[in-house]
Length: 357
Image 1 (tube, helix red, strand yellow):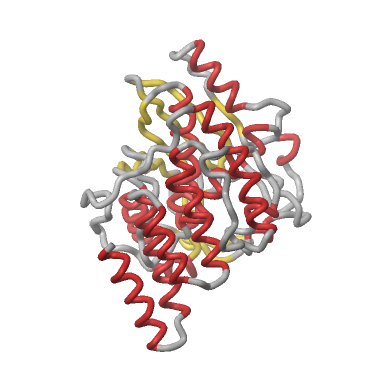
Image 2 (cartoon, one colour; image 1 turned 180 degrees about the horizontal axis):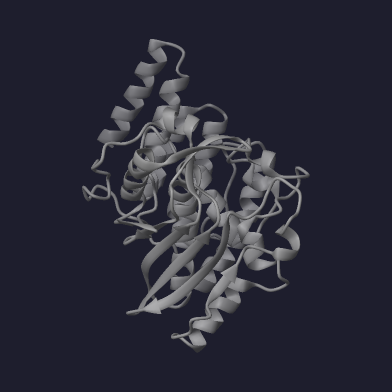
């Protein structure tokens, strides 16, 4: 087994793609040609909370990644809410209404128990336990079944070591561009930080064990293979993660209000003057300083008001990794959708003005 030791997802993405490009074997799959690493691969993140991928060619959508993480922690499996942040996501649903393998639903509801709540209770009762494992794979629902959507991540083991919560995720089939170093690095590290906060622990290493470690050749050709040692904003000290949770119980209450509030925002067509319940029900700093401003900016983006979206991110989000990445992503989208030189100039003027502010 190959082991990739990395500081964060940005370094892992670079090392992993270069390794796969060098020794991967080309195979046919049911959805296209893939390059597959000859053995399983374990990726170890030293700082998993540095979860935002800044690679411009990969162009990961930070809005979708964070909102899907919150949707998961809320235990949801509905297409309607999450499809607002990725209009093509519903294609993986069998009925267009819900997802069979939604991780959050499986954590909270699939086995008629809330695995996250029971996990926290178990680790509080016995910090040395080696049985702190949650499952996403359901043999009754998944084994030899037909459908579009089955869990790629199978189960997750937690262990407290040196007063830090470590986590190991076991994956049967890992697309390293879209999955391992895209969505998985965000979703799973958010889960790890969430559980660590409930236990009043620091976040330790996160290990992703990928039994089938691959990338689609067409996607690899499009995003390219990054230079072996590029610097990212984390390495340069330009950005830091924003703490996910300050008060665990209040955070859980806030998540309920946030999901309901954003549902109304979606249903009302992303109204620019929609009043979120910030300060009334939404009280946790992460929601006030990061999540709600991102939703508001996404609404302006959906209306193709790129200037307003960029300004909202710049002026209302706390200085952190999400802010930097959202702003860069929106600028790229605005420039690609500009139909004239005059529009491009206005985008650059907006960016220059926001930088001065």
